[in-house]
Image (cartoon, rainbow, N blue to C red):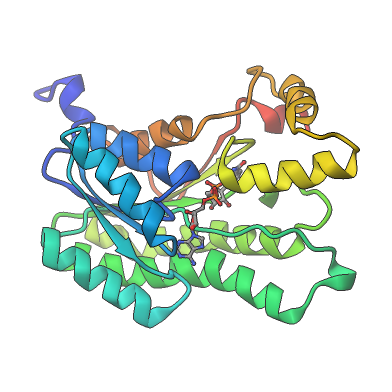
Length: 269
Ligand SMILES: NC(=O)c1ccc[n+]([C@@H]2O[C@H](COP(=O)([O-])OP(=O)(O)OC[C@H]3O[C@@H](n4cnc5c(N)ncnc54)[C@H](O)[C@@H]3O)[C@@H](O)[C@H]2O)c1
């Protein structure tokens, strides 16, 4: 072997686009990929937080650009890709992470809410994939696309039908796009996190805790941690490290796969 192990995980010179990169899992992904040497585009609807996340990376000596973007909107995705190409002239890695998960039971679910969730969680990855892959193909260096799905494609809980459908669709989309982009040496894989402490999951945990009569999420979080074979919730960087694995040269022959990053939760539920 003429490559060192460290070299396999070195992303120097590469550019990674992380959607929903301002906070939560996306921020953890941005941190890890930046630490591996990639220049990062932090794309988010929450431009203020995206700017703060990019600034924190730049202050650490990394290179990051904040881009305001709504991934469910085609014009916005086009503008986002243009802004990244203007700044960095290439895209090597796309992490389709942005998603929303507002809970609603089917009996009360407005069609507009269904469409919104499917728009962000499924149309978004489609738009970002098509436009980022175009740049990867033009660059001729291959590429890596990682779709952030969920254990919710195989398990569920009340109020998540729209979300589950979007993530199930995303898993299928991974397989189809892996096949179509393989001739261009672009790999496409899915990571399915289990339980991760993020601002998004905090909203869900707070609502559940309130329903159960708790003032804080602590009792709920602790009880849930006991169900996880590896003993605790994931932190966003744990998902970031799994993303690094799939973006590394070590993973160049892996495509179309779904990997659970759940501390073994799927073994138990
Ligand atoms: N937190 C968990 O336990 C968990 C578990 C399984 C899967 N996931 C998945 O991980 C990903 C990240 O989840 P999280 O918990 O970090 O969420 P989060 O709500 O904490 O962060 C999501 C980020 O995406 C941004 N965003 C939302 N809609 C957007 C849009 N249309 N365009 C661009 N940016 C947008 C938000 O502003 C936010 O910064 C999602 O795909 C989610 O489905 C999370």
